[in-house]
Structure formats: C-alpha cells, structure tokens
Image 1: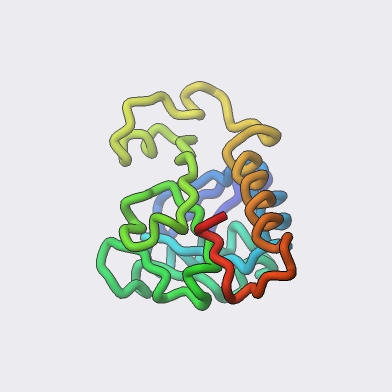
Image 2: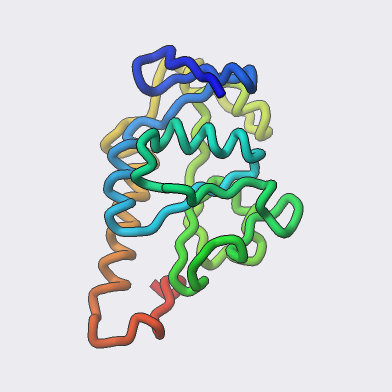
Length: 177
C-alpha cells in the first residue's frame, strides 16, 4: 500500500483509498507516553487495509501497537466494537474513542474523545454543522489540545489504579477509577 507524505510528517495521501488523512498534533508524544503506561490497541470501524495503514502511519516502527490492530472485519457484532476481541479483562481496559455509540456494551470503559475535524469532509460525513480546522486555517494546540488533555486524564487514572499496591490488582476495576 502506498501513501505519500505531503507535509513532512502529519498530512498523508492514501493513494489506494483516494483520501487524505492528517495526524493530530501531539500524537507521537501522546503515543510514546501512553505506551509507557498501557498496552495499546488500534480498533477502528474501518476495514483491515485501512486499519493496517493507520497503524503504519501512527506507529511506523511497531513500537506502540505491534500487531494489536483490530478492524471491523475482526469484530463479532456488525457496526459495534467490543472488548471480546481484546486480550484483557474488562475491569482493566480503558477505551479512547470519539464515537460513543460504537461501544454499547462497554460505555463504562469509555473515555469519549473530541472528534478531530481537520477536513471539511469530516464535518459533513459525521453530520456536524461546523467549520473544519483547515477552513479556519488552524489546528489543535499541542499543549492543551484533545490529546494533551486526555493524556493528563490517563496519567491520573494510571496513578490511582496502581497507587495502592496493598490491594490485589485482580480485585481492582479501572471503571471505578
């Protein structure tokens, strides 16, 4: 699969899909720091080729996700995401996603992310009546954008979950944190 970097690291033309994608500012720092606290998966409602392409863009050396890439083709319920295809106990899994409806059975594990609307087509595709960041000739701020904000939350959750080492980890539930 071929893609062309048209912006020196953040804007890519996915030729096989005839689309462009833009990586969120701060994504590489976010992935590095989050991977030091958590085992991470990519889970997308896109098909397998799209999922693998996104994994390659986000994690070209396979440091953060390895082969933990899940697409809609791997799911067990059509149009839904589920933890049944993720290795790990539900009580120890956090989900970051921008689509609450995809996680009907696992809303307690979900941290809802702000959707990234860099392109106008994203606003239209998801039914938002807004101007995209590209139309505003702007982008998210690295220091207080969505990824920086959620990284702070992840640090707090990780700290609270692992703080009390007296308690058996098997009895802890991240959903209570």
